[in-house]
Length: 240
Length: 301
Image (cartoon, rainbow over all chains, first blue to last red; front, side, top):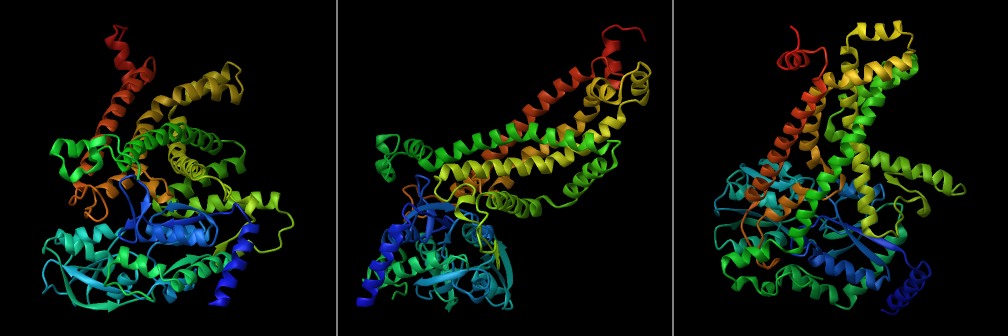
């Protein structure tokens, strides 16, 4: 704990030296409760609050940028923004291209959602967002994968019977199921996919990653991260 | 939270329907949606002349008597026409942006010792960043917009180049020969005889391009510009009460219906304007339309 405080203090000092550095945070803005655009057109949600707090702790000025999910990694490595904070699960495949911070949510379950509990999730048509761990998982099963560019469209595909079920992060699906009034239900068991969610950085930018790692550690240590998870992702969502 | 425009909007769930809609349609998000129509119109207003300029340059160089210039013009037209738009938009903008930053890097940071390519990463010195990392978000957005304009202009310039190249060859050869017989140089014949006459042949092709350009604007979101299709998709998607004061189901159909009407009205207006331009350009030309005008005006058969 002492080392941690010392480390944070040191970090604060070095951050103060390179003052007025603006860090641009890239997010998708279409994945409630993690990140979404609120009624005023601003980025909101779990990651907005988390990101702002992390920037405060790391003494950085942060700016939010929305970017399409499909091109979110290419735009990071080409330097259009400095970090991705968009509900991105830590996977080996992505690690080849970007470096992840410490995870800020524990590995959280993915779940199937369909119109009825007896939907065929083994051999049916399953919707998922392009380039996600869920899409990769479906491709490895016997089911037919139906990909969509945004999470919202995967749910709409189930509602319009285009797909038999959707596979997504359970935290994303919980509000959808709750609000549907019984029209949509979870099917089968939860799937543990991925290694938790983390921020992604350019491999050439270990300095910035270090700053955020320290801030995430300090939020884990004082319990504020758990409070945020409970507030935004619900009591049942796994926390630290 | 920013106060809503109407004070009654503070608790929308209690409102009667028409007021609910009045509040709903004036949220900050919707204002951004309305603003994005302006972005699309602005893009078209800047891109169309820019693309025409690119096209004119390409066509003029393609028919140049100086072989390397002619190859360059033809190569540009062939490459851009051959590559799928979406690949072009995904790849080219990032490459263009990196190209600019690399140039600035070479000029501004000559004693930078790290490599620019580090694995997948593209790293230039902070001073070479475009826009600078410290610039406010609107600068980034404006820069992105002009990158989009440039990309659109290059893509559509190639098509326009091909149309203009064809139009220049369609101008009857005797017209040029007559000009030369009068002692005009190549350059004079080009500017005084060929260019004024080619438009009537180019316009059908160019008007097609204009229509395609209007329909291609949704590609803007690939370039990070939040256009009308992005906002329609975002606003229309079903919203649960936890994340908005205005929960609703899947309303994408209605939003896309608005876009449909917008695009239809816009293309219809364009058609009307283009017809008028065509009529004016045909006047006095040795084409079927020009001949018909001459006869209906009572000219000798």
